[in-house]
Amino acid sequence: MGKPQPTGPQFGYLSDWQLGRVREALRAYRLYDLGAGSQHTWCDVREAIAVYTDVEIGRALKIGGERLRQFVEGVSNKSRGLHFPVPQPESLAAIVSFLSHEDINLLKADELEEYRPGYQAALRYAEYLRESCTDSFTLSVSDLCGTLRAEYKEQDAITVLNMTVQRIDGGDDLGVVQLVEECARYRENKGPLPVASSEGHRDASELLSQSTSGGWGVITPEDTLVLFLKKKSSGQNHCYYSVNDMGVWSKTGGRFLYLMNHKFGVEVTDAFGSNLSSVQKQAAQQVLEFRFAS
Image 1 (cartoon, rainbow, N blue to C red):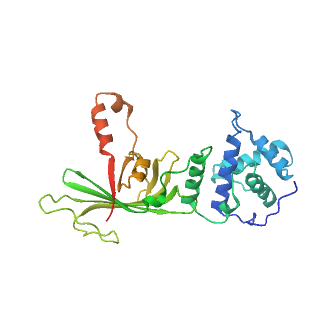
Image 2: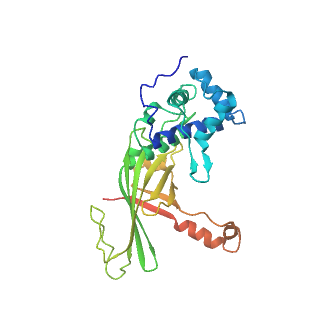
Image 3: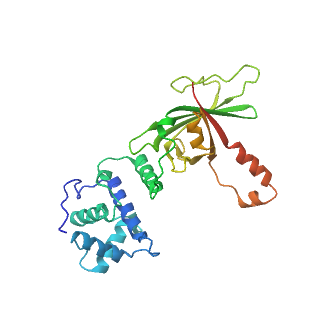
């Protein structure tokens, strides 16, 4: 097969995020054995790389396997903490060549060319969902592009959510999502809450809190919309799942959708104990109706 020729990335100068991509792909290969029910050892990985690239990492099998393990899992040191020794350029080029081989297909060449952290995970997830699926999509991200708005009232406050969806390359089942959440005083006797400006700003005297979350959304082959978001101020993760039939929504030209907001898990004692009814009520309150902004 011949030794790999590093014509793309310079393997002696890979950045931290590039090395991170290589580590994760190599970790995935070790844990995945084509459905055989067992995982590879690091010595197995070393041998597989040698078979595909003619490059033997380390002077011996066990030494090479240990070097791969340290590269992926790290080495603990009291003074330095956990650090990750990087293989020599020739070995690193062989690892990338192996992971990029069409038989392995765990790392694409362009994944080391551009830093796209939000897109890469979404692309992999969408690709996984499409495996062995021959049905065409009923709904596309293009149908959802724009701004959708939802609001709900709690005691003397009202929360307004404006969600913007944009299509990105990688298929019409994938999009970038931004969610702006504003909580303001509820003005029951003073008319409806005024809509924020086009820039998303509102009179500071009315606001109780404001936050922005960003992430991406994927439409599954079953016409379910799944959103993965991270709050920018705190790093908190949360998800939204579509509740209504998105296929019907698309066919009827509907202009709203229902999303279940899942922020936190439910304690088992609450779910199956005396507080089950309150948990059910809380879950129902997390289903939000989003309508397209006019």
